[in-house]
Amino acid sequence: MENPPPKLQVKVTADASGSEKTVHSSGLSVRSLLKFSVSATLGGKDLTPEELGELLSNGDGLIRFKGEWVRVDARKVRDLMDRWTQAARMMSSLGIPLVQGLRMLVNGPSGQLVQIPEPDEDCVMEPGQNLRQTLDILAGKVPVSIPELPSRLDALMRPYQKEGFSFLYRITEQGFGACLADDMGLGKTLQAIAWLDTLRRKGRLEGLPALIVAPASLLSNWKEEAQRFAPELILRIMHPSSPDPWQPEKNLRRKDCHAVITTYGMAARTSALADLHFPAIILDEAQAIKNAGSARSRAIRSLHGERRIALSGTPVENNLNELWSLMEFLNPGLLGSRKSFESFTRSLERGYAPLRRLVRPFILRRMKTDPALVPDLPDKTEIPAYCSLTPEQAALYQTQIDMLHAVLDEPDPAARLMLILPILARLKQICNHPAQFQGTDDYAPERSGKFRRLQELCVSIAARQEKTILFTQFRSIIPHLHDLLSGVFGRSGLTLHGGTPIPERQNIVTAFQKESGPPFCILSLKAAGTGLTLTQASHVIHVDRWWNPAVENQATDRAYRIGQHRNVLVHRLICRGTIEDRIDAMLKDKRRMADDLFSGGPEQWLMNMSAEELNNLFFGSPC
Image (cartoon, rainbow, N blue to C red; front, side, top):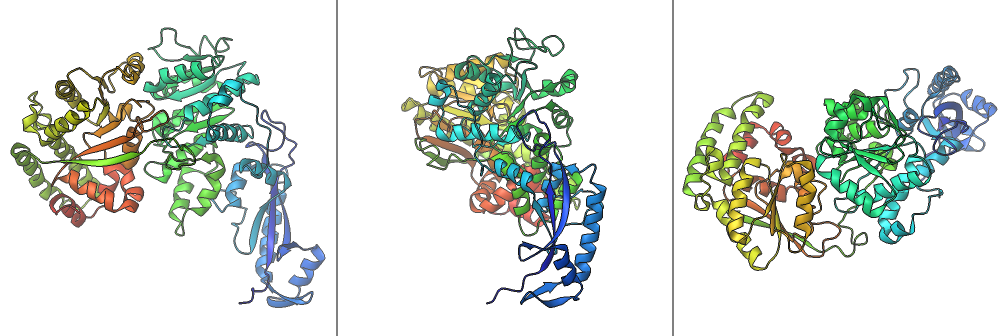
């Protein structure tokens, strides 16, 4: 089939002078302002004003031009030329922010000046020479000078980690924010420390220190890894748990401090931080700001940082609004306003290609499943550990199921959700142990099929003198699980939950990581599902299910990460014939649903289920 005749189009070139002075590097930066020039193009070739005039004077449709047929919509082209010329003239003294120009180049969320027409098949947008060079640098197409690593780090870091360090440096030196989205356990902290130490060596941290914001359980981990990998990088803690906490009112320019680490809660509550302009800000486990409307997320996004990076193995856990929140911290304005972004994502009927093009330069994602990345990582095997309800559990379970019949008739999905969630929580408690549901201390193993199955499983683990970590979402059950397993292993284990003091958390990790240390550690999923390294364990047991694959995988990766030399077995305790069994089957059989729907947790998928689907879920046979 012959190619269609070329079409006359309006070409808008976006560029800046490239003469702006930045603190990062020569050329454009995120603060550059773009201006536009307007011309006409035919088949990829620019036309002179005389050639354009000749074409427009010959009417519409197929026109013979220089020996070939071309397509012309003269009225549309004249209109576009007039509107763009007027817009370019209006912006000749101001320009528009570079991030807004990037959105226009990929037909991203608009929110742009009303005078600017939307690009379509009659109007193409292209970057000019300076902007093209910046885009090529962001995409890694143009080699840039990356500082050499100290010999200690150079010998220690793996090739993909050096690539990650180069990515962070390349993007941030252009004034943009970067997200290192490596899978859990690939050494994001090490790569960020190498980046920070490079800033120190280049004199970028001689005034104010850099700011690191992380979950409370990771404060000691960051300090220890900085001392281990970059001993000349002095890191101090801003938290009441520290014996000598850094204080923004008193310690602004201390020479014995290159970086300060604090928690998300402290950063959000310490108003003095909002008045400072840090040379660099790092968000670790950056999914902590995923709720764009929360006070914490707004406070973190309002912090001022010359360079910004985010570390997250799961940059999007539930929905695309989390991506907006992350990018609004890294590159404010890149995805437009929250409202325009939501409207834009709803319009992406043919897939997310425009959105991917827009954010791809700023996110580096690598997976542990790539054998070329970490060829020496051992195998991970997932094994369901099925158990039956005892008669007592079955009777309690049925009473809650009976309550659901009336609840499912509620026509309002939001009201129905509020009625279902408490029952769902009680069903999970009953599956764990009747005493948890009843609020008593009689946790005899024979009363719970799950406790008996856990006992059997750990007898086998203890006989092989292997270690295990266990996750539960219920803090109240942790002491009783500890009592059960202490009897199985013949010695006490460790526990970590939201109430564990911060200084003790690293002590717990250190004790468990010793080969002769305690044989098991029980952790609450919410407090310990990220950041910790527990590679002495070759077994991971999920006592009860969070039903969010991303969250459960994060928890599993406390053991399955760099430094693990044993094959890891993942055991998920599942009560047969219950809600646990049915949802596990759905997660296994419907991977697309797991990715697109279930990753939002029970609140999201229960809200989206019809009454009939909910009936099948709670009352039908397992999928």
